Image 1 (cartoon, helix red, strand yellow):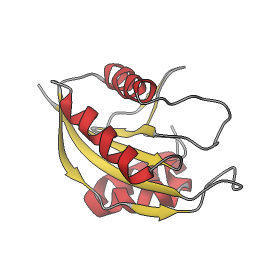
Image 2 (spheres, one colour):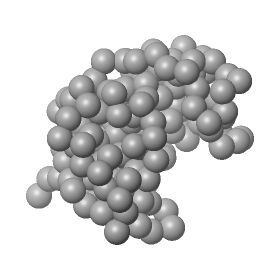
Image 3 (cartoon, helix red, strand yellow):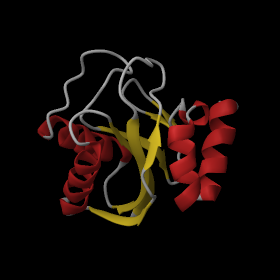
Length: 148
């Protein structure tokens, strides 16, 4: 059985366009993941910590046989394999891959909260997501603003 998930990707170090392309290649190479939609790339100002280069951001829709935590482990491994080092919260990065939503599942664990708890505050997530899945963008915003 496959599920549908939506990811947000961003980069602002090195060659951000190349970093996004490489992340997409690695995601698509996973045997249990198929990218079904891709947004265009949006260049945005940094959020949270603003004294850094602009970000290249995009969203993708996936079909996957992975469960949410398995998908999280897969995207974290891609970040690590691509050289992501976590020095500071909201700091510059070679690649950032976040799960924004997984079907219409609501999850809150120490490792994963779905939908992404800050998505509704971040235009760099919502604008690309709106482009490929407006219904998901609306649902994520509603749930994030009104958690149960």
